Length: 354
Image 1 (cartoon, one colour):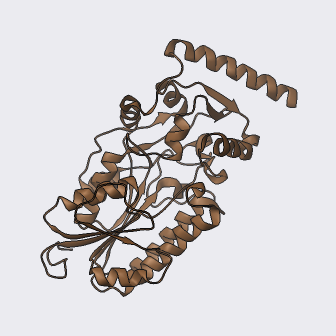
Image 2 (cartoon, rainbow, N blue to C red):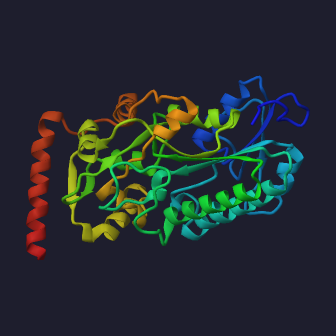
Image 3 (spheres, one colour):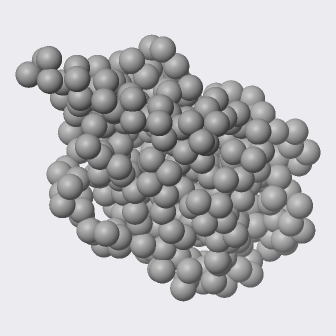
């Protein structure tokens, strides 16, 4: 689809970003502001943006409210970047509110976009979490792969429903370029997520007997793909991540953190401990990631966007650590011995329980 004539006046793109208060959404708005091909940038959220935006119009609105249709109509946008998706129930007031914001908010947005004849591009920020985590998973998830087990609750169920609604929108509006970007876990010096808080713990709880493969995407690389999707024509579903993987044990050593193996049977307890003691909001359905890991194939993204990530998974983690977000608590030469002692202690506790 041509980039010409996107705007109402024919002078340039008119872009609306949902979830504008988020770190990555704010950076995307700044990038679009600096592009002379962009006539208008609008941002929707319930919270004031954290970035100092100069020509982005902030609209305080709730996506769950049908009035979002008036926002789309009044701003005359042709491109919508939907980033108002949250993975942490604690950050928004609980699981039920999180589901409303994620699923009901998306339904209202897509319903409004379907009726907006000016809309020609819709980009959805999704996640590789839709593939789940299972011991029988493939080495690499391609975009057409289905999860071994359908999610029944939590963030994974939300994002699965959100994608389904987006695909339905695409069928009803075949004239719209629908781009679904499935990002690996974000990492970068300026972003805070459940995973970055987890890796910052003084002692990292792990699942006994497992060393999962982790895949990360640096926020700089995520921004490049989002920007390309907003300004070009790239319909389809794409995994977005840094090349390569890092094992959880390797990540812990890089961060200078000892690990504490806990039995898988204590998964629910582990989730509660992480949330209560440290604010790490790993919900129960996300914990299998700490057992089996998850890795997406990014070859389709490379081919379609012509973008090669600047940071591999390992390099992204290293840059996060070197930026001072994590201060090692254990010297590398003592870490292995400490982990061995913690492991022996865990085995002793398991033996007594059995």
